Image 1 (spheres, rainbow, N blue to C red):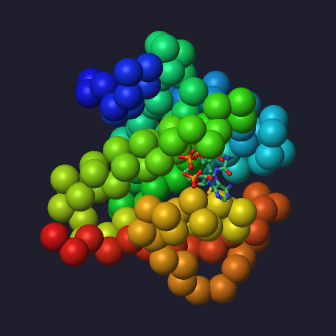
Image 2 (image 1 turned 90 degrees about the vertical axis):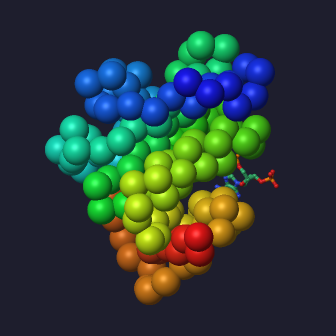
Length: 146
Ligand code: COA
């Protein structure tokens, strides 16, 4: 469990290990805050994913997942702790895991408000805007060069 900042740790693990904490974060951010329908949030794919959990002073504050096909998703940071680099650290951990697994690239479906967040990490948008769970999205891709 590498310490990335004095008060912040990113954990990586499976759903059995991290699912309880990740579920609570996703319930608060996606279902309560963003009004994503429950049956769309819980899509049955979590057991197949690698999961990432940000702990601030030991408390879960952010999460993300990596699907077996190298799609990153469910990136969420508690609203009161945004803008402090936690999302970037979660994304770097998920990108590093995909790279380690030998994928040539990672992809994600970005909510359009978050395009600049992913662009800063090197992702480029492709294709047209589309709606998912009532929210506008665009697909984005980061190709590994090494
Ligand atoms: N729009 C534009 N820029 C954004 C942004 C957004 N929604 N979210 C973050 N950024 C920018 C930050 O300003 C920061 O830039 P700076 O270093 O110049 O200040 C940079 O991206 C890094 O942001 P960071 O602090 O690491 O992000 P975060 O911890 O706030 O997490 C999200 C970003 C998107 C995960 C967070 O806003 C969130 O959980 N949103 C609600 C759920 C969501 O929309 N998830 C994405 C689904 S695709």
